[in-house]
Image (cartoon, rainbow, N blue to C red; front, side, top):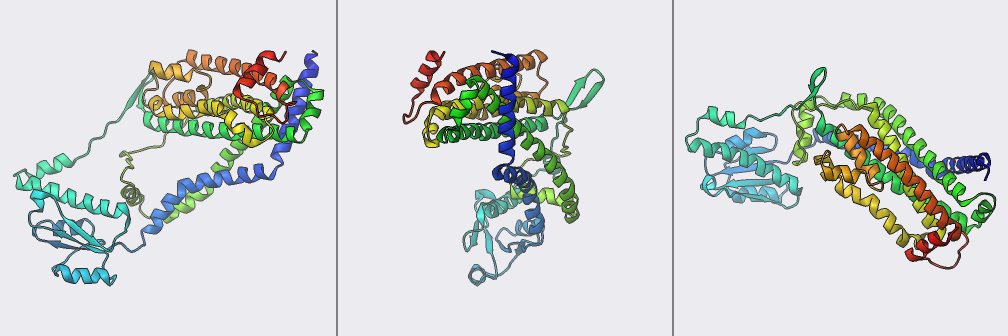
Length: 435
């Protein structure tokens, strides 16, 4: 085989795949919509919170039979609570007429039993009731401590939060450690790789099926070897994916640069906004002094490599499945063994983020089918030893060439098979028999 001729054919196939894909309406629409969806995810919660500042708060009347707690609860949020001296029946009528959202009845033995009742017309969401419980619980806790004879200064001291600042030791001295933030970055990048591998892998499979159905694949096969076709297709569509990702990054940066100042102008009090967002989501825990760290260029380089290597590995396998069937619906069963190794790492990300340097995390991240996601998470979350990074690169490259070899043997037989839905057993037989 003439190496120059083979390389030329691969380049021709790469160019064909790239040009035909980037010209499609689907590619153009997805490329433009991607950054807009990212901005929506980031800014819509903030915008909703800002707009919610001007919305009318729910008015809750308080009937306090303890004569101790009602005024304190009212002072926590005067826009929501007010102490009422009317009877329950009068307040009930107000609720039925829609003039009042509800009323809270605090019984005389509340500090002993810890049970109170809120009366509303129903609805309001879980957050509505949770907020009332949180406010009442806080006041009740303080009052119980006072009745137990605890000094007010002690109560204030107990309420003081605790903040742990993590510092990283370097040769130059010490610097702030952003381990948690980098772990989040690793998870986000790992999830993006997971999504893109599934997305572009299915593109490859669908493209091969369409070419086979239109008999185009037979024309291509007559002028190039299966290995050359497979390599050209995978690299060509991989370049399409890389182009889209780079465009997303650039367009997202431009849009955020333009939108952030406009949104910032709407925020009159950033600290109040943060407090409101945390109240809206009780599980949100933003540490005091939270900062967004700078991301090393090496992390972006790692992202590009592990995305491309993961895509190349899985796209060849998806292409092999596509060449073996006549319809996309027939490919779903054969794709399950390919999709499982993509999904499993996502299930393991939580453990790897928590223990990025453990033996199990190291072993899992060096398994080629898991490497694109799990090694990306580790690289972002912790300094990974150089030998492990090199090992992952070598294993990914070797696995890619191995998968191309296997897929090309399936491809050689599959593109000429029509009318029969093959099983996994048939695919293994084609690999053994194809010479």
